Amino acid sequence: MKRFATAAALAATLAAGAAWAEGVTHRVAIHVDENDPQVMNMALNNVANVTKYYESVGDTVVVELVAYGPGLNMFIPGKSPVEDRISTMSLENENLSFAACGNTHRAMSEKAGKEIELMGEAKMVTSGVVRLIELQEEGYAYIRP
Image (cartoon, rainbow, N blue to C red; front, side, top):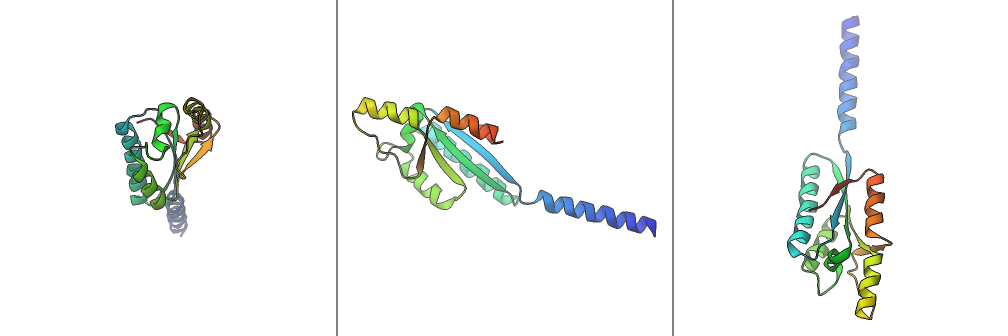
């Protein structure tokens, strides 16, 4: 009888562990600092691929794509080579966000002599570099395509 109780307890423990392992949430920060359509598309491919993989195993992934320096061009309407793709992906994925570096935006706006418009999907952060540090401190994995 004791062996049965031990086996039942072990089975219950394993079942609880399996239930606990399901539905894990992963967090990923993706960094773009180049005005290169290939790099921008690679970053968006990374988003699509990790999202597809984790969904296929029953997990969730939260992704924040952070752009600064020349990479900020990916968020400028009419100039971004990935504008349509960003719009589509943000509608399809509620766990995807885009962060635009405020320092870069301010410098670009000063150089242009006017406020540079950003896509509505991009939220302004004070500093792209600082945002990447914050995300990593919060446990986000860091990817640079």
